[in-house]
Length: 245
Image 1 (cartoon, rainbow, N blue to C red):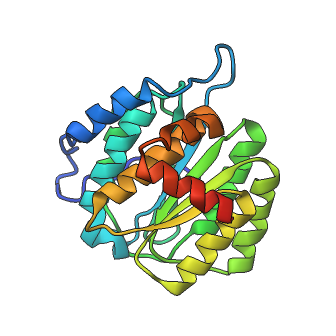
Image 2: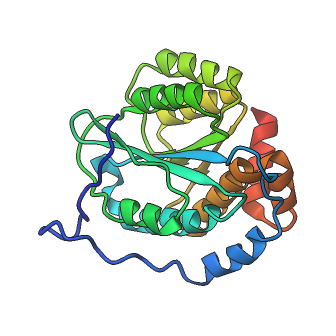
């Protein structure tokens, strides 16, 4: 797993594009974030691995999804001292992990420069990276956003079971209705004690709410998620899905 940044897909001269503005939704969430219980002073910083599929199948909705994801993680980096690592795969066996960042501007810069490339899914490599990282330091949770699964599901589930024993919950957010992805994502969520939910790229608010809820859990645990669920549809959905797992 290497660290690196890809060029912005709309700039062929490889210059970084401007940071996207997330608007009033982020401002509103920042106010909510201040009410969430932070990690206790002196405790290990909450850590979240944010993994996403950057293969060509996600090209049509990539700009929209990237805008929502970047905006949400600007906010979640402020909850309880959350640290985030971005992991993505694309092309021919390219799977990259960023450095850990607590500054939301640094994560936004990384995300907004990713350009989708054709290739098969590499979810197993992502899960192996999460397992290796969790053996070195405590990882509260991981989020995976994707629309397909083209691998051996039993291999994925074996690693997911290990992550569950390590206390790393997986939140898998599926774009579309691919049946192989649905079955695999749901089982990974069950084995880790996390949640699997679908979202429609035409309704970005749903994904935004789910990401907010997953990040609240990573930053403040179940207590923060339950607190956020008062009046927050995404947190309510996540809690319900976790009970089903």
